Image 1 (cartoon, rainbow, N blue to C red):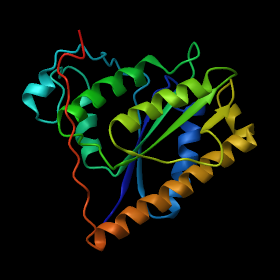
Image 2: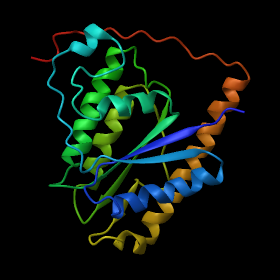
Image 3: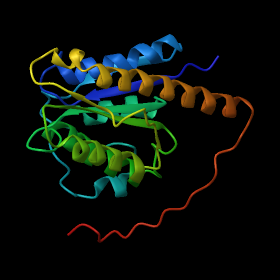
Length: 215
């Protein structure tokens, strides 16, 4: 039997805050479908942003050349997973600096290594007090689409409204959106699994990259 696994990266400095509660609600539905889950807290990690050294394009070893933090450990876990959930609170109408640094470096390494995340599933989860949720949600979805991932949707945009820790549990529609997201993700994962078991081949894609796009 093929075991499927979803990783979630929580970009909130609050390890057990509202972003975590939203992700765990998605996890509950995935676990009901016997899909393994793991929540990784990056919100307090010292993750450096991408410095555009382009070494990952030279080395092509599936790792970032900056090996002084946890990003390469995360990349190894991602390669063995079936998909990702990215979670972030809204800071200054955008996503947290930690999840942005994670996204920039992981996406660069993935593109440099034949889009190694392609056709994995992905979903974004946002905890918001008032404004900036859609922008944050769209920014994380851009990560999935440039990496040729399968974006999972729900019955509303994947956001919960809250301020104090635990307050998101009072957002009835937000919590229902997370449960529906989990059910949709489970269905897509099982559909992909069934296709692989029937021997359906993945299409070949060719990506030509201009190496001078970063100055």
